[in-house]
Image 1 (cartoon, rainbow, N blue to C red):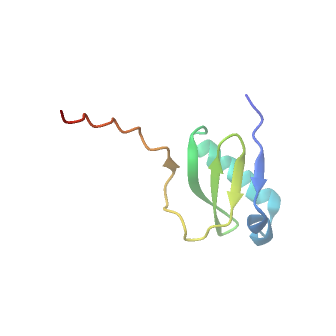
Image 2 (tube, helix red, strand yellow):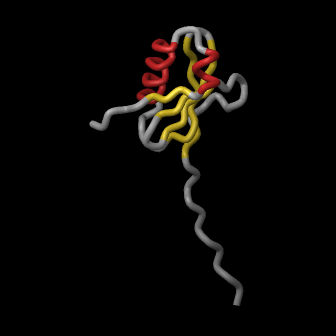
Length: 85
């Protein structure tokens, strides 16, 4: 299994009361969301709301009340319409 890197944005690092607790909560939220293709997932640490997004690195930002209370994933590809003619 690849090592997961948790990176806090400057805003998240400034807002958190306990950096280690935030990092652990982010990793737990990543695991709970099923790992992989997550674009945005909300979670809480020490009573504060944060959001994580992931590609190869899990990035944590402080986004209270700015995201929906669910995991956002990639939208399914739309099939192109058949042209007239």
